[in-house]
Image 1 (tube, helix red, strand yellow):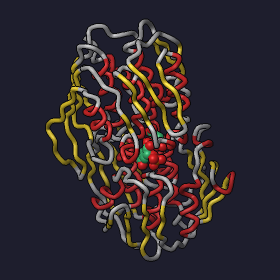
Image 2: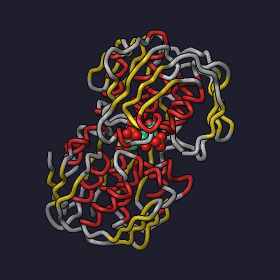
Image 3: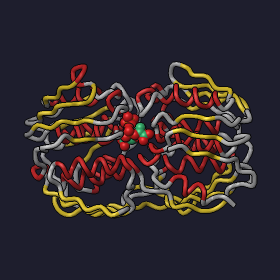
Image 4: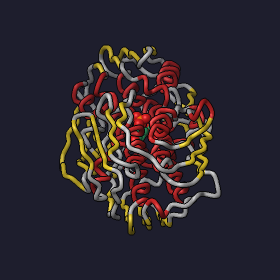
Amino acid sequence: MNKTMHSITNGLEGSLKIPGDKSISHRAVMFGAIAYGKTTVDGFLPGDDCLSTIDCFRKMGVQIEQKEERVEILGKGFEGLKEPVEVLDVGNSGTTTRLMLGILATLPFHSIVIGDESIAKRPMSRVTKPLKELGAKIDGRDEGNYTPLSIRGGKTKGIHYHSPVASAQVKSAVLLAGLQSEGVTSVTEPALTRDHTERMLKGFGVDVQRDGLTVSIEGGQSLQAQHIQVPGDISSAAFFLVAGAIVQNSSITLQSVGINPTRSGIIDVLHSMGASLTVTNEKVVGGEPIADLNIESSSLQGTEISGELIPRLIDEIPVLAVLATQANGKTIIKDAEELKVKETNRIDTVVHQLKELGANIRATDDGMIIEGPTPLKAATVRSYGDHRIGMALAIAGLICDGELTIENTDAIAVSYPHFFEDLESLSK
Ligand SMILES: O=C(O)C1=C[C@@H](OP(=O)(O)O)[C@@H](O)[C@H](O)C1
Ligand SMILES: C=C(OP(=O)(O)O)C(=O)O
């Protein structure tokens, strides 16, 4: 499907309930599946990626009821998972692939994991290598680096893993395998990444220890079913935060958004750029901090986004690049090589498409440099089947000097099925 965007001349206004957090929704289903008892989830994200997770666990015999944002999972522990007779299809979801591999690594059966064209290009050895060190047998193209992957799990022994990449997916996969491994399993990460796994495992009754950048878990612990209230996804809120900041005369309120400090880098960046952003009604729900966010348009300054900030806003970089085209001066994004191994190479796709719109942007080895402000001109652009690129371009379309057509917007349903309806509801 193609989508045509029109510029907004009189501002965006209103309040939105942002859909559930994708990372937390995946984990709620997976942890519910390996726990004992009935786990209930409210605020679940019914996006294509999370539905892939449900589908894979159903194929392993787990009873899961899902109706929109409500999910019930009847867990019978790890031993409740059965050898799937069908392949496990993760669709477009890296999180499903990598976290599920951590679970499959310790299960005494054979399984095959496949995904779409994008997944087939994303590196999996970052998880299959440590899982093999634990004792799992995993094979696939390039020695288990690419899907389709064949997994024969079984008896595993804890390891101390120093991850070369700051990745919550790697950390989570190793910890999930550690739950069923002999002795202690620990992961040391080079920079703090999102800690939803650690928080949620604690909620399920697991003892998780953290010492600086090292997280450890003792094997043999079982999970007890929980109720999970999923907060709004700050990575989805990001599109409206940027829209409110760059479309003149806007005021947008986003309700109950997760502001976990390992995810809230965009709030720090908006403040450092001079955005008019206020955070109110802060509270903790189900072990995760949430708040309402209000953004109003204002003048913006370029900034540097680098170092330990990167894992705290990695998925927001495409839309932050759009923001930077409207800020005064230079915005430098560096230390962000991880962008190259997402649904697309997001350094290439962002730079390519924003150049088409007339932005002053260039790619670097580990990020991009943007000089603003530049007016954006109408064009036909591509999402490349990457949900975040599609949505970032839609936000750019709000300030273009004419009609912007985005090709292939179907992928947006991966993380935000009602994105365009929500955006349209903010028109005055
Ligand atoms: O653990 C997670 O839920 C995620 C971790 C991040 O990936 P990496 O672990 O590859 O950094 C992020 O980009 C992805 O959207 C979701
Ligand atoms: C990178 C993303 O997700 P995943 O790794 O789960 O495909 C994303 O949602 O931007």
